[in-house]
Image (cartoon, rainbow, N blue to C red; front, side, top):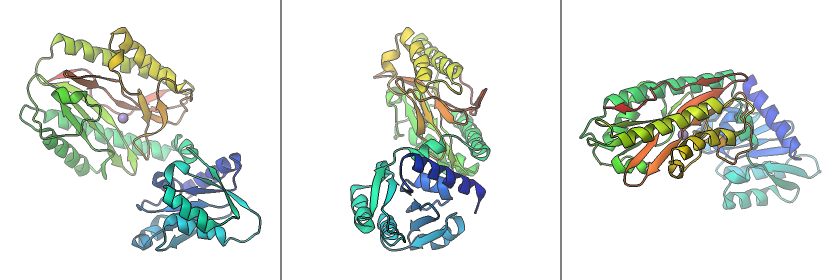
Length: 363
Ligand SMILES: [Mn+2]
């Protein structure tokens, strides 16, 4: 077995024991991938004290054999939860077993099937964020994948900005962005590419429409790529034409808020402190009321994963984590401005992974 997966499975067993359980049922696909390398769209992983079982269906017979670093792959028509329940029911030994279950990642129906199939000899304990906590600390290979994804995303951003001109539709621009990332080797976008122009830029998740870009408008581009299974996430805001002084003032405030957060983030600092550093700058510019989301989030196999950089988050930023720093303001009728970069937090330093220019671009 690949030692990276062996190590992760051992760590997951340790966290499971700390929870007071002897086994872990993993139903969140990014966690299945993290623990055994399988990338199929239907799977569950059962980590028992001395074996690891993965459940999927016949579409993945060959792929599971190639990818899954487990003791045994089960291919069956039944749902993966039911399959896991049956393995638990038929296991040897008479003692009851407590199984930690990813309760945030199983449907009510699957959960009923699982519990019925496992029978009374199995007890259940909710496990929330157990594997995610392990995923927070990236290995050198994981960090390199995110670094490369961030570099690729930055290149795509530079090319996308060069395509901005009046008359181009948001959908056209988004399609070019997605095409370019694939041509550069990405397996796809890490989330639906956002292009939002004019008043639409005030929509925090402004999915592209047929609206055409016009002179004297803000344009927010938010894009991310998946490369070797790891995500990047990058946002830039540009103005078409010479920006009025009010837009310049707003932009400067967001830029300074991001700078303040970047100067605050380091290993051991409370996540909330990073958020508050950005918020304080916007509050002082009387723009705090327009900053409607948290300052950032973890980045890895998923584009949004722990830690969350919200104002009340007491959790400490850990060395080895990769996070986004992305303050923004959204003013109804006028538009929105967001600047987002990805950073890797090392023991004694912080590395900015994205490289597109941060200042206001007036095109
Ligand atoms: Mn983001």
